Image 1 (cartoon, rainbow, N blue to C red):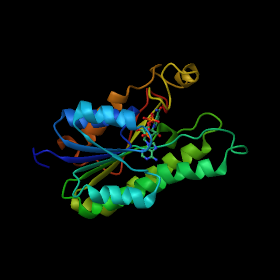
Image 2: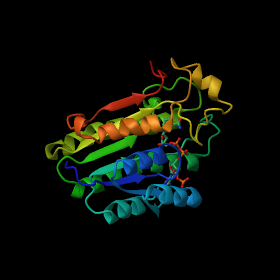
Image 3: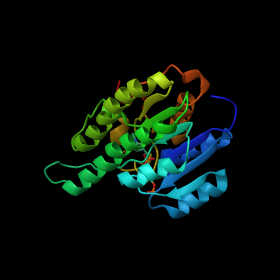
Image 4: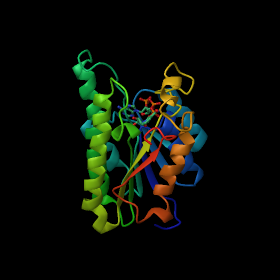
Length: 236
Ligand code: NDP
């Protein structure tokens, strides 16, 4: 990679961890595009504040996500952040909601990564946002979510092998409880979550963004096919 502005795409960047990642790359002077599905106001505000380009595109739709990646040309960095969390007793969960989560958390990252790698140059970086639940699922009701984040691990390991010959790295960042709309730091589940953690607070979205930035930076060129957990010790 050179010192020129990098072409960065963040899939699912309007809120939470994705918005922090957009902000972090924009602050570094990169050319950033991010996608979103529903939060038009948040996307517009982030676009205004960071200079990043917002594009509405449903990441759960394979054709849409492939078209989005294609539309950004030769990427230097692809971050796949969009994800859903469906929790509950598997005997009661809506099967369609589970399948939609699998579309978004598993199928989309795979197809987006493959599409990006078609044109990515030497030194390209692919980072997926997984979860510590890919490693550890210590409470009931998380089987379907955990399966999506474990699937991401296998995907990243395999794609790292497939694209390593071109010095493209593929990594997973695995947050633990992180303070976002999905899992508010002051929400009803907070004390329960902190009970599993060594550092008893939610992770901050900017802390996750810092790890993503490192993986996309010059010191991480030999880091690939690996899981990078940032979870306050949730998985320890
Ligand atoms: P939020 O729900 O706060 O934000 C999700 C982001 O993804 C939003 O910008 C949302 O955009 C976007 N998004 C959701 N669905 C789609 C879609 N179909 N197409 C395009 N964009 C979409 O989630 P978090 O920031 O908390 O989570 C981000 C990632 O981190 C997820 O993959 C999640 O599984 C993972 N994670 C989160 C943890 C946490 O505790 N918060 C812990 C471990 C992992 P919009 O609103 O516009 O639809």
